[in-house]
Image (cartoon, rainbow, N blue to C red):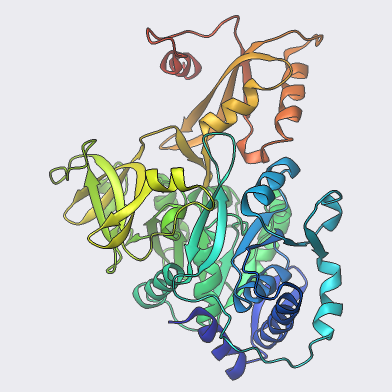
Length: 504
């Protein structure tokens, strides 16, 4: 399967079919093709043979997917960056990626940017210069070419750019389209920002199957009444989200099969699916299948899947994350790199075409995590897992990288930022669980010199300073203050003691 050709097929056959809906905006397959063709011509004209990645900055605007395809058609990988990402973090991404071109929904956020910045408000004039332009696929991203780069949390305080080639996305989309029982011309819900790779689970399966993407933005999520109204109008068939988002929706009294009568499949990825959430969904949507999946960003969204049946909810404290897709393998290895016996825990290692090409411009981290097994790319996830009768079970992180509400983050990075704040002498960041999954972060602080009378004033000042470097989902929800932090015999902060105290 060639991703572009599959999408173009729908543009040729059903040009008036709506492919994307966001609030009052509608985009058809014909418009998607015409606009992305024109913008790819502009990119070719301005940048010629330069194949540097292009940064796309925005939220849920239809221009996001137009620009993704324009980049692919002109032979460039794209880097999606959400509007919620702070300016300092974007600066790190710009420096690391060596991009020369930024398309932005809010170009005013790049006043001192040395790269060329094009606002979304300029796109129509650019498109008008190339009317009815048909683009050859000679220059398009294909095979081992990198198609997108998603920046994830890095332990040193700098984000890492995960490179996903066309062949990996091709493998993922083929698996989704063939093995998940999905039909053509369905409506997919997309709630995940495009800088979160869960968005890929709805974006490309939908576009290659002639479907419609129904976009839910962060402002809708913040307004329950608006969210319900959008869902009522959506006619969605396939729900794609983190379990946390479904858990939020389950708190809405009207969230049931009545407002979403055509919804037949829930697809979950990005974090652990709690038994209670799956059980509640089955009660509210008795006719819908619930599919649990697993995979890190480095292996193209997901590599395992399983439909959750009622008997699993009775017999499992933790749900399985499924069986591996047929063109990949899951290995469970001990600390010496040897396979562990059936049912025992070890590191999950993924092998096969789903595995990406490493971290952009970071050979040291790439060599540490990526490799080859029997001639196939492999990735050491640092996730603990076990295999039982071919089913994979996830048992948490081996290191200090976690997920909260689907967003991956390195606790060391957040501690680094917190410890660097003006009013902080020493700090630790603890992940706090709610049931089976991580719910929020707690900042434990030994305060430096300050003039605040109340602790909440100090917390507000620290949070404001941290927000210059980290997105909101990586900020501690609460802070507690200690005269000193307990230490282990090795001279390290005793996080176990702090966590024990925090959860009393």
